[in-house]
Length: 463
Image 1 (tube, one colour):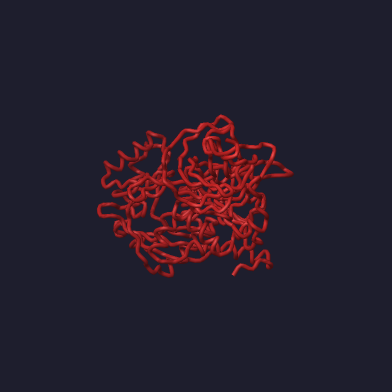
Image 2 (cartoon, helix red, strand yellow):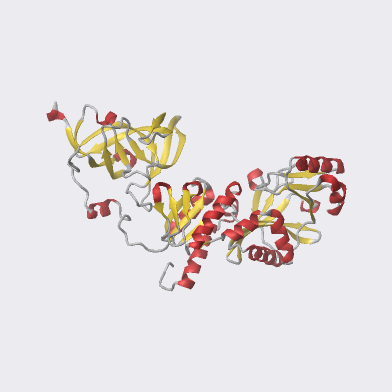
C-alpha cells in the first residue's frame, strides 16, 4: 500500500547508527540491485570467533580530512558488476539504515566510491516493500544545511590550518605509514594517503598535473613524503619528479631516492665522499670468479643481488667452492651481483642510524637470530637501544648528505678496521626503531617538513 511506504527523492540524507555515521548523502537508485557504501582501508578480522570487517570512510564527498573508523559483521563476499561493466569482489555487511524517522536493517557492499558522485548508493533490494521513489524531487526527508553538517562533522568546514601533506606509498596499513599519517594529523596538518599505483600525471608545458583516482587533481598539495617500495621505484620516482616540477616540496627528492636504490652507484658515491665500506667487488662476467673472490679477501664472503631488499638476495658463502657456485649461478641468470668481504667480528650485529634533516635522531642495534648472519628486523632480528659513537654519527650524517636524502636509514657495521657503512635506505621502516627507542620518529619527519616551510614562508605558524 502506498500509504505505508516512505516516499524518497532521487537523493536523500541517511545515517548508520551502528557504524557511527551521523549523516551521509545517498544516491537513491532503484535501477541498482545492490546498495554500496564508500570504504577504504578495508580489512577482515575475527571478533569473538565471528568474521568481521573494519574499514574507514570519508563520509563527505571531496573531504579526506573527515574519517570515521567503522567495523561490522561480515556476512558475505560477492562479485559485483559496476555500471561501467567492471567486476569486483566486495565484502558485504549488514547494518541498520536510518532514513527520516524510519529505520531497518539492510545489506551493503563496501567499495571505494571516490570516483562516484555519492558516498552511498541505495539500491532496490534495500528499499523493496518499504519505499517509493519520486525521481524528480530531492531531499524529501530533509536537507542538511551547512551549519548542521558543521555540528555533525566539526572538521568539515573547519578553517584550514597547517599544511596539506600527501604520503606517497603503497600500503596504508603498514605501521610506518599509519604513524606518519597520525603524526601529521596530530600536528595540525591535512594528511592524505596517496596510493602510488592510483596516481597518474599529465605532462604539459602550460598545465602539468598529477591526478588521483577519480580525477582528483593533487597540484594544491604543499608537501609530499615519498615512501616508495623497491619494486615500484621507477614509477614512484617519476611521480615524485612531477611533484617537484609543480614546486611541491618532497621530503626525499626523486634523484636522491633513485641513486640510493642503485646499490653499486650508491657505494661509489659513498667512497667518493670518503666513507669506508666493506671491500666490494663487481663483475659482469663469471670468467674471473677466482680473482673476484681474492679481491675481497677470500672466503667467507657475502654475495648480494643489486635488486635485493630487507636482507633478501644476500647469501653467505663460507667456502671457495660455495662462493664459486653462488656467483656462477647468479651470473648464469644474468643477475647483477656484488661480492663483499664478510665482517666476522660483527657477530651478526649492525647499527641502524635514523637520520632526519642532517641529524641522527635515533639509533638501534639489530642482532640476527641464532644461526643467521643478516640482522634485518623483517627476518626475525631483534632491536635494542645503543649509543652510537661520534664517528658513527658523523658517518651516518655524511652518508645521508652524499645521497641527498633528508630522511635515511643508515646501516653501519662495527669491524676491526672501524665502522663500515653497509647501506643507505631512503624509505626506512619505523616500527623497529620506534618500538625500541620510544621516540616519535614519525613526528620528527613532519617537523622536517615544517622547518622547510618556516624558512620559505614566515606566515605559517605550526608549533
